[in-house]
Length: 569
Image (spheres, rainbow, N blue to C red):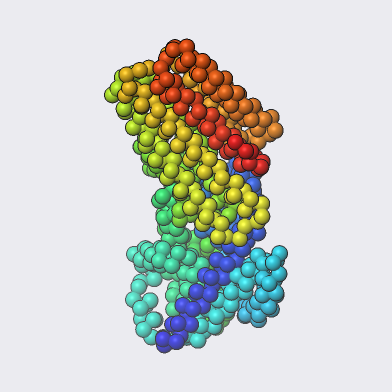
């Protein structure tokens, strides 16, 4: 094979992969806002989840995209592990449509339809409102152009008369179980390397259609592709949370289990599929009808791929609860004091997602941020009653660590939103992201405020004076108002944005402001009446004033989430 032929081969494979990716990406963008609702609404039981995964994968033409999306949904807490397993099973059936499209491309000259698609696509791309449809058409055109070029390259290579290639494949005993295992492993490795089962399927079809690769070895390669394609989701889930890693492992278990039982009934099953397609594996070159028979090989591969995944799904769909228990036993919950460690829960790198899902993950991360800050405030409330210096120092150190975590969370969420902002977003999504940036800024200020309260209390314990019983009561009442305000803020952040909920937040902030004014006036009178010293009075008012600022930060978060105009403090 000449260098030029090799370059043509890899170039056409690149066209095929690029076309599939463009088509999949554009379909995800078109369906982005609806995709999450579809996955959530249609995964109420194992059978609807199966159908959802099947139709979504058939639509976006990528089981990898569906699987990674499902892992992302599990990571974001939108799907349970059981729902995810059924969707992944459906994705394995949906992806078989790709093999049928490719087999059609290898049997018909479809490049004639490519150029009109390019022409229409470029017109749509320059129409702003139809740009995504144009991207989709370009993806389809590149996919078919790649298939057509691959088909012609396979013919031009004339592999059936290439002696070195024939000698290589004839060195393997077609009836040996070891040969089947070798080609299975080879298919897995190649798919892992190129991260595209479609590309390896195309190469398999070229080799089988040209007559150099026996059908049994070709099908062994297809089985290997089924295992190799699971690596993508498992790599993506390495940095994800435990449920997402379990979903990715369930995908691998599903495919590996299918390959294991298939190896037990390999030849009878393949012969049965050949019977469906009316392919005679006993015909050799020179026999009557050999060429017509060889033309059916790509359909045999597609039919096997479909039958294998259908039967495997039918076997395993009844055991989804058991599969869930198994993956939970294999993938253990990470043992760590996550409250005191900085690790984003919902935002993960390396996982394919649409802007819609990215924004949703960021929103859930912001809720997690607010919960962490509420825990930090609870520590401050506990700190005020601690008199033992060693215990105080230990708790103060935890608050310091939380303040550092708060700074890091603001930076990481802002970075993530900035990266999402590089994608094509709707005006509504852009407005949502602006609000979220303001939310994380105000939440970080809450962390600073809690730390300032702790520092003031630290000054108090290092000094010789203490607050009076009445001052402690006033501080406790102010802390109680802030605790209620934080609880109310979290209610709004998780989605309860009714007018009643928002008004309740404003009413709490007004109570905090009025109480601060009352305590400020009373403090002046108490200092003048020598109830306590000016120094302890200053420290006391530092706490009260910081509490009032915290109230402002909290209501600013509520304003940002509810889409209201910023209120002047």
